[in-house]
Image (cartoon, rainbow, N blue to C red):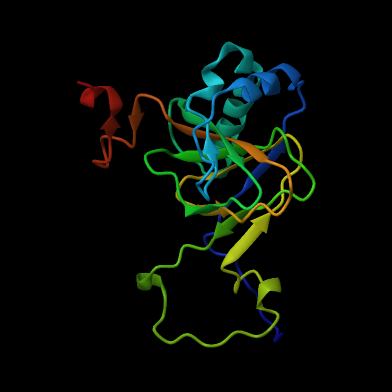
Length: 215
């Protein structure tokens, strides 16, 4: 390269940490939860209970999740808020051949995934660059063969988790799961978090008072 500096503007953070507590009883509870019928769905199975971590047995794990969400919201994203709360939390199972299309998590602020039963060879989570027509030039050049090794030319990034990893990212980030190519079920726990009571602020005319809209 020529003598120059490259700055990464508007980077997207992916927060990765590991739960080090005992999950034996928690995983037994997870395995006992009833799942939806996803046999014929390429997207897999989702737990019928979408507030999984509200169960008392999950409290140590839930406390850990909330500490991580607060760390991410305050020290990474620099959000100004009084308190966070959990939104929905749900189990996802992917049988061999099943996948989940690229998607985001609407009506929430932060998204998390906990890998409580990671198996070697499990499909990675795929994050996609948000590219819409308003951000894309009408002139698109062909790319060099090595474009996937350069951070500014990638449109998809795959992250391979480890056992008991907990990852957090902004809910607007597009993500999905490629087909499960193993002969085992891929398991994970999804968790959303949102500010408690209000979102935004009155001064900038962006305030939402959640209780105000309750019937």
